[in-house]
Length: 437
Image (cartoon, rainbow, N blue to C red; front, top):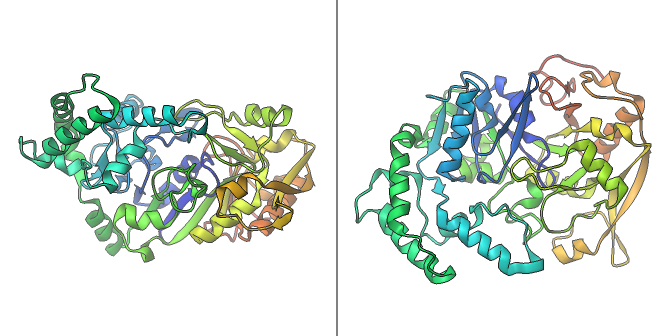
């Protein structure tokens, strides 16, 4: 059984921990979209790892990790991450493959994105300004540079031709600040000796792994509500962050995706612009932010915080065909006397229970809450569902009811071991220790 792990909210749900927890059951972990704007944080025995491009499975020996064709790759960021892992004694040799069809993020992409965000003024999207969007734009416009292009470094080859034309276009767009195409090419040439051993036809590799019966874990970045097609457009990322993106972003058949696990915080957060119906301001929002340490792993930006939005998660369940949820950061709610859950919206005088497709309409919505009692005692580190306070168990069961799917995992702390595995769930047979409800 293959498994796809993805975000069921607006990102930052804790996917890295879930992937890390599941990885020992798999031979391959494959990342299928996004760039180094992702920040997957994993704690192992108190040590913190933040991974941006490399799949979280790299922390486990013997597991092959793949960066698929749907990912856009900044080579400086990639090798910085590799060097950081090596400093902790984590060997990637023979275990990390990069698709020859993955597109590259180049210096002019970062400059173009910074300029585009500045020109939007108060209507900024809130991107990380790391060049991800412009790299995908070049990909769609058929002027991008792919990893495999570095193999031909001749003056009339696709690498040099594309960069020469793109730098000239960039200089016409933002003004000539001295960027030379020759310098961009020279930098890429320095990367190639180190990159070449990692480059592979990863679609073929995955096809053969599937034929051999090896289990594959598909890792998504960002989240459903940030998906380019199904998110709160235009306040979205530039790639397909939903389960469908696993097929196109890795070159596998849709039937190979298998079970889909949606990761959702026990509350809601968002970074950047766009609607967030349950957003809290003032003391309650600050309390959530500080207790949950809600600051971006990639950027350090404070996250906007709010109560759990079941309308948004139900939508993610439908779009992705989610089989079960992994609920994270339950312990953050330990300090609250009462915990509201949004079960619908009031939109222009009407009750709405499904996610509006119009972003302006969503921005005009106010949440309809039902309030559940808090438990006011620590749940941190609990590993058995039956050991949770009754109110916490009731809270989880209510989330299952309003979202329409069961929970397979519940995270009660940052460390790998601070996790409840639900017995009888889609993952219960694989993960130990088994627990009872």
